[in-house]
Image: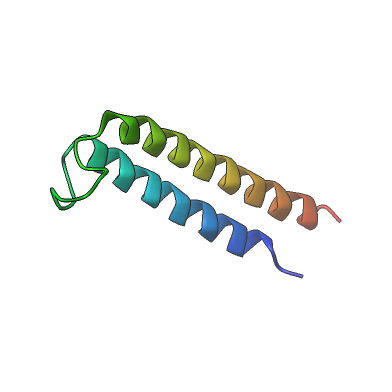
Length: 70
C-alpha cells in the first residue's frame, strides 16, 4: 500500500495553505473583506499550520524510508 506519497502531497498542501493564511494576516494577499485580512492572529495561525505541514511531510518521508527498509 502506497501511503507515503499522498501524505507528502497533503503536507505540501497544508504548507501552502499556512503560507497563504500568514500572508493574509499580514494584509499582503487576499480580499480586504476577508476576516483574515490584516488580522494579526492569522499570522500566527498561518505559521502553526505551515509547521504542521512540515511535520506531515516528515511523517511521509519516514513512512517512505521505513517501507524501503523492509
